[in-house]
Every structure is written in structure tokens, then in C-alpha cells.
Length: 261
Picture (cartoon, one colour):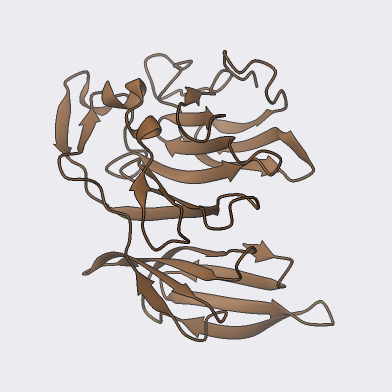
């Protein structure tokens, strides 16, 4: 990812985090290599606070979350999101209709997002197995977004893993014009939208194709790989999907229904 305000490029790799900086000649110069030998699933510079975040995928120690207040010179570990005791993963799509349940535990810190300029202490993390977590104190503590986790489509077992064991949230979009509008991409489930600050969620998948399902037009079960919003036209979304590339340009025309593509 590039961060024009700081002229930095962050590269998360299996061998650590590489940081490059744009010089006065518009040339990328190597700045630092940190977390050597540790896979970095995602890295983000919060433009509001200047804090640099990195999600570590330790093979032995599991998922770790670290931050730096000096652009990678020093780092501190913070408590990673954790699923409450008793939460379950429910799966029926991938088991031919037979419902399976197992404990929900953090398997992957897939992506992060700022919570909006009007909420400088808010952050989001998308995880496997399909939980969205929010922090209201700059990442010192995290809570599960219940409205999404308890969505009927998930509790009925219609979320499942696409290339990994369980569903994962890999894309988080906060509308820059309205921080109460949040969109997420789930593999496999699809795109979901909240317009009330994460309290309620609606699937936005009309027009997508899931050729791997018995019903390719299923409302839930689609497999987006990445969802992005156009910076200059926030009603325009682009999606790289398992079954093609899709675009939506109709924004909020029908909040009660589904977005057409």
C-alpha cells in the first residue's frame, strides 16, 4: 500500500515488513526492514495518528499485533482481538448441508482499516474466522462487532472458507463522507454493508456470480477476493472476485434492497 501523505510504501512479506520512501526525485528508496523472518499479513499507516500497524502471522506463537509510533524505528506489541468464550463457527455450505460447529478462535489477522477522520481513536480489524473487530481507544482493546457476527446468514451456516479453512474478512471500507457507512468483503460470503455504524448489515451481492455453488446467484456465498472504493466517486466499488471482476456504481439508491452491479 502507498501512503501519499507520508510518501511511504509498506510491503508485508513472509520475511518481514519492508518500508520504502519516496525521495525528491520521485524514486523509491529503501528505508527499513523490520520483523525479519516473521510473516506480515497486513501493514497500515494510520494517517490520523501517524501510527504504523503490522499484523504478524507467527507459525508458532499465532497472531500478533504490533504498532510503531516512530515509523518503524521501535515497536510495541498490543493485545490482539480475541473471540469471546463460547463463540462458534457454524458451517453447512461446505459440508453439503450438514451443520458443523466448532469453537471460534483467532486464526488470521487479515486486514485493518481506520475508522474515519471524525473518529480518530476508532480502528477495525478483519479476521478469520469471519469476525470484524472494532477498537474505540486507538487499538488498546478490541470488541467483536456483534451485528455482523450474529447475522442470520452466518449463524445459519452460509459462510465458509475460500482457500482457507474458514471464512475471512479481507476488505474493510469506511465511507469517507459518512463513517457510519461500512462495507466489508468476506470470503466466502460476499459483500455486506452497514449504514448505522455496524449495528445492522445487509448483503450487497446482486449481479455477482458464484459458479462453484449450486445456485450461482445466491445472495450469500459469493467469493470476493478484494473490494475497493473509488476515492473520487464513493458510490463506485470495484471487486476482484473468484469468478471475475465486477463494478457497482449505484451507491445508496436502494438501501432496503440489494445493490445492482
